[in-house]
Amino acid sequence: MLDDLNATHQHCVLAGSQPRFSSTHRVAECSTGTLDYILQRCQLALQNVCDDVDNDDVSLKSFEPAVLKQGEEIHNEVEFEWLRQFWFQGNRYRKCTDWWCQPMAQLEALWKKMEGVTNAVLHEVKREGLPVEQRNEILTAILASLTARQNLRREWHARCQSRIARTLPADQKPECRPYWEKDDASMPLPFDLTDIVSELRGQLLEAKP
Image (cartoon, rainbow, N blue to C red; front, side, top):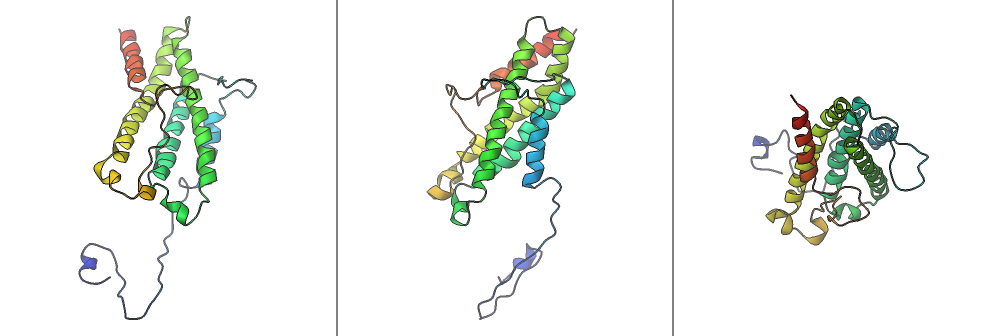
């Protein structure tokens, strides 16, 4: 690495005529970027799920706004800071190691359960007899996270379909994952949350004096 590399980089290695090996070691801040951390966050979000439900439906222990808000924020963290970041790399990492495949499958399963949690919250919002004040508190708690989720999904999907992405070799093409079609019966909610977010925002506006 010669020429004017130092003009744009913090340091460079001068290349001699003989083969050499070098490595750079940095101290990482690991309080939020480890697998153990995100698995603990998932456990925190799913503590609100009842364990005694026999079918695939998700039942919640509490509809306290603070609990719901925290759960939806963790939902976004798993999807956008872990799953989509990982699959955007394509499959080239498997040439080196497949170690991350199992943890990512585990995270995706936990994320899918969080989709069920969101669905349960939306059912509660629509429940007849729910006091208006309580409905508004729930809407206020979850609306920002759902809006961010919809916007970020749109951005990530566009990124994966970009012109540059389409020119990459097959094993390097980014994968938009998780992604599912509207008629996918295995998913409790659609990929595109535009209509849901619009409906929730309308309900909240109607309730304001």
